[in-house]
Length: 257
Image (tube, rainbow, N blue to C red; front, side, top):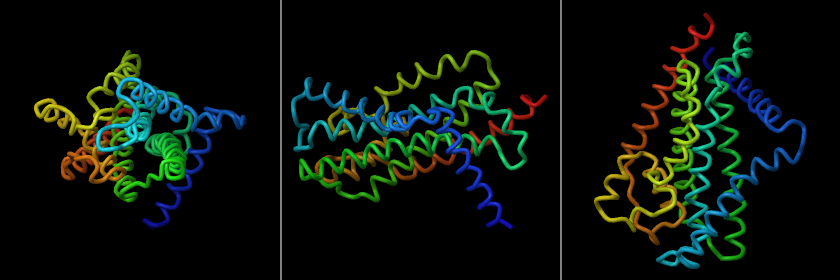
């Protein structure tokens, strides 16, 4: 029974995933291509800014363009998952009339779409880096684990945001600026090893910084000293997702009333 339920839920999320693609991009192939181009172009723009400001390479020989993309592309997925969750509950209420579809399924499909886009960008960029710069990630499974933890953290926060925007008027207007304001304290663009100790300790209160440091460890290894704690990361992911699930369950009866 449990296995059958898991198969049904996987099929529902799969269908919602492609529904989300069609809703956002229609039947145009260019719309789907833009899903990958947007994070790629923004990441390259961040890399270009860092090259102008700091030169061609980071210290310890890490190419600036790779350092910037490895930092900003995952943050782009985080921001997209959270910001697109605003209004997700009220916008998808017609789907709730289907017995097998839940709001959790809708949110999972949305988060998976954003995560897939950025993962595709990183594969393209790293493939080019391996060819042109003879660069290979230090530990690909570790980097992927960091990405998945960051995405699940974003998914938990997205469920909370979706519930909050459905239940509290005006919250939706705050989501986009707040996600941009999180960039300076996320640790996405600056290695924590280059920060003063006191500032680094303050930044590490933000679980995002741990995820970005883990991703850097997977990509760059011993070239850069990294700071992250497994217990803190896993605890943050679990707590945020449990709170998100509870919030979605709490807000649904009020919308159906």
